[in-house]
Image (cartoon, rainbow, N blue to C red; front, top):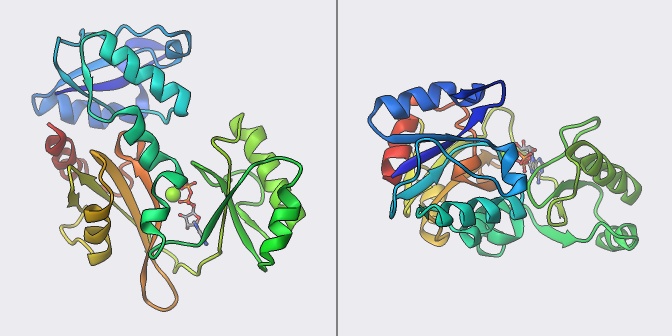
Length: 260
Ligand SMILES: Nc1ncnc2c1ncn2[C@@H]1O[C@H](COP(=O)(O)OP(=O)(O)O)[C@@H](O)[C@H]1O
Ligand SMILES: [Mg+2]
């Protein structure tokens, strides 16, 4: 296995800053690691250093890519003779909300997928909820007033903010029922080849169930406790582009090792 990290744009011989600790640990543990120019991918330029060896399985760890971006990365890895551990289809299965929602409907907030067109407000009105949690297929709104809307026009405002601050609405709009998660109860788990991994050794039953249901090579599972004391699934994510959050690096290395 070779692990691919984005290089620091200001010093191309170094890994990009946020991945420094992880790169050092993974490389130090004896894994082959390469750097590449993340921004050049847009121009279909991909020259990882050291080179990918023929037949090598390649794990990416870096910035989120939109669907076109990941398709480019996976294609380029193959052109260099490598095998992406996560295919384009597997990336979308966990990175985009509609990719996993139906299979997890019992464990997660009720969700409708809409287009950001002129019918949006009418469709929101038809739901008739008091509040709406608004995101695109990938991320919530981290700008301004956050992701919770009280009316169709507030939903529109959040959608416009996401489009402005992130440059696009990725996939479409996801309208989720607002759930009452308790503060500081959200934790991230990782699943590699069907097996769940935890930052503290404890794996909740919900996470084990999800690991049995969602068949993708490497993904993250965020769960939180609600007011009723139940564990709920907040979201899945592709493991390659998921932050390790509260995980100590020595524990996270087990997740990388599981991919090898
Ligand atoms: N349906 C919901 N109801 C209430 N709060 C939510 C809901 N979904 C997510 N949140 C809260 O908003 C945060 C961000 O939402 P999330 O879906 O994880 O998007 P992101 O991709 O931006 O992390 C979550 O960590 C959780 O605290
Ligand atoms: Mg999240």
